[in-house]
Amino acid sequence: LCSAFVTDSAIYLHSFAYGYGDKQIIADTWLIQIDNAVNYATVSRDGLCVPLTGNNFVSEPAMINAITTTDFTPTVDDPSIFDIPAECNTAV
Image 1 (cartoon, one colour):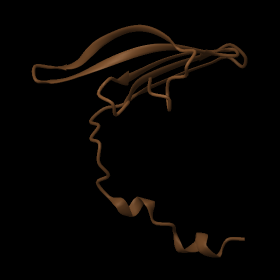
Image 2: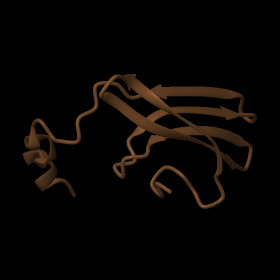
Image 3: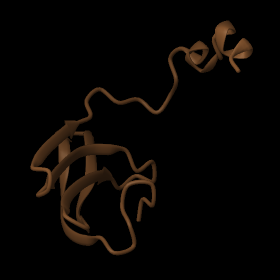
């Protein structure tokens, strides 16, 4: 399991391939129920556990949320995004 996204109590639903030809990613979809929320998480099976889609349904307060990851590459294009801004060094 991809523990960052899929809990031990998750229920496996199905798998399928994203893409086509030699550019396919095999993905698994899991049902995760927590309190008043029903979540469907689809993550890549390649060991990277890339969150490809997520659908969340909450009954109280009523809410629906959906995410889709596209054009993913397992690298950081600009490592400077992790640089701490100078003003944060003087924050109390």
